[in-house]
Image (cartoon, rainbow, N blue to C red; front, side, top):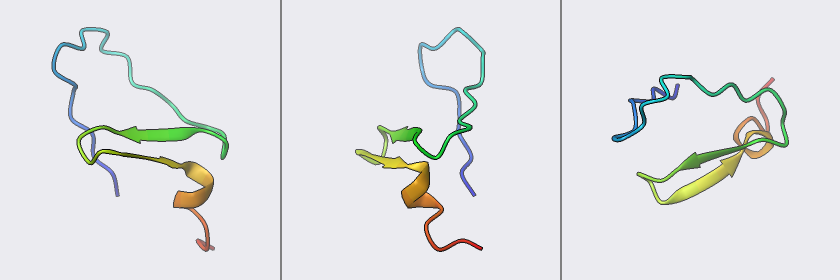
Length: 44
């Protein structure tokens, strides 16, 4: 499970929806990015 807190300085208030396995989830706090395809690889 991934729980995201608001990013400091982000005033848009609009959540981002990733709906394609080609999408990339950016995790700057962890210093990494991961594609949804890689994240869900092997999940049945």
